[in-house]
Image (cartoon, rainbow, N blue to C red; front, side, top):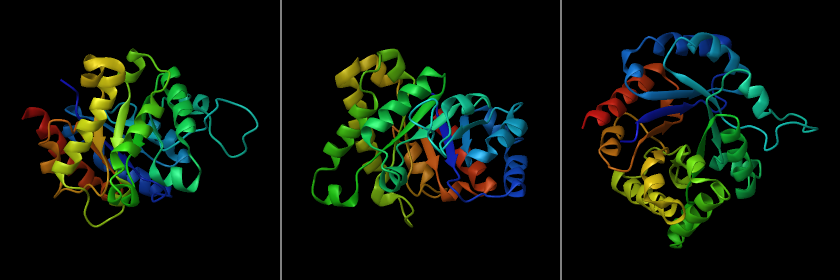
Length: 256
């Protein structure tokens, strides 16, 4: 049985020590995090703060990105080696905003996945179709290209450790996300792609989570789906009480 997981990326919304400490103070004692795997992704500069406050907690922490090489003359970049110093457990890779604004190509995504796995971190690889692709009937093809590129050249053991975050670009930052049935269909697609390249056993181990305007109201239906292994929250996870509430829904899904 795949372990359920909940994660939250703060993007660039929490920018003071006070905000970060208040959030962590609220969530770290919540009993639900003893029952479900979880992680928080702050801005780079707050990762040491999360390590300090969460190291005795079951809640993990991660980074929203990293450099595609481990060292060198790459001004402004942050190396996986630096993140490793702070026991960073998860790396978000290939988010639609980074693909669009920072030219994060499929090749770069693959390089980052390799670096993350090689340094004992879990890559959380974001994949998803745009509205244009969906409307043109080529959304599945786009997802297939992204998924195959992400695990290109990896062993079955490495692929089994990956997390895919299905995030349809047209649902990010919207009032409503994709329907639970639509998400389940796309998660089935991703699992089939993994199976085609790495076999049924690996496909059954890979966790696929959903992100895209996830909120408390939509979480129960999502977590009732067989191929949705967790939730990846953006703005609705900025409030610590919301994060706890959605974590409770994910944990309930483990007991169904």
